[in-house]
Length: 290
Ligand SMILES: Cc1cc2nc3c(=O)[nH]c(=O)nc-3n(C[C@H](O)[C@H](O)[C@H](O)COP(=O)(O)OP(=O)(O)OC[C@H]3O[C@@H](n4cnc5c(N)ncnc54)[C@H](O)[C@@H]3O)c2cc1C
Image (cartoon, helix red, strand yellow):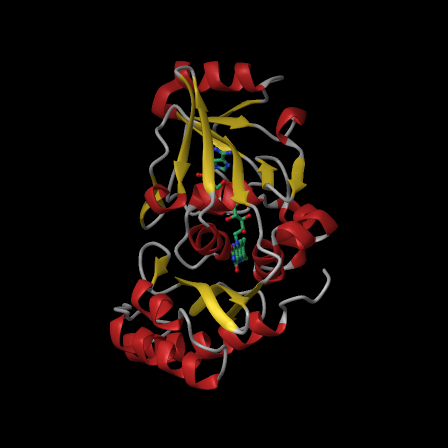
């Protein structure tokens, strides 16, 4: 299907991009990797008259990683992040999620930050942001602000980003050396969006679980953490009994919807199964060098 007509802009700097966005107001959309925006336009689900391509902005092209955390710029592609040793070492949950994002061709064009801005509830990166306590850095003509993941995802394809803001970076906090990470999901075919999935972390100190995060994708309009299940794990030994108890809490507390791909009951069931699986996989990665 052909795209609708639009005016294409390729600003030379972030300042130019921000000014242009302010000038064009809600007539413009940011283009990053185009892997979601262009299908949306081709299907006429959105027909922005102006496209602002940020792909040439070198100032947003870096990954800064260290023990303090990892910052990923808005033009960093999924594939660049997936092959980054620094991200594998300092943001293992991000690294665990990336192979699940579509197919390699999509990851070669699509960006990590674009996925967060798009906020598809079945996408991996929003769930990873919520599990990690990441924050998003947004720029507009009014300046810069940082938005916590817990406040960022507001609903289906809806975020706290204002029309005049560009997401410039995502920041993940420092990683604990005693923590493990896993992203597990069920999709109908490899590379499809997941029917349901979970991004999970577990931090084990002196043989007991210190903290755990369970952030689900595909079961609601936004990624969802199940705090009661996370709390149930604290102080327990990281074993099948603790994981099953957490899974039971998840199954009884999530409230997914039905669609043509899966019923609510099926999604509720697999949310529990994935909880057990994810926690076991995350535990197995603790102390394993990236
Ligand atoms: C067949 C197919 C399968 C896919 N499967 C998966 C999957 O399993 N999991 C998954 O997570 N994703 C999947 N995707 C989506 C893919 O990950 C996209 O790359 C991603 O969702 C959007 O990133 P992008 O850089 O391509 O953004 P774009 O398509 O360029 O933009 C998407 C939206 O975000 C906005 N935007 C982008 N960047 C910014 C920014 N910096 N500031 C403000 N707004 C911005 C755009 O205006 C647009 O509204 C799939 C895509 C396809 C085509």
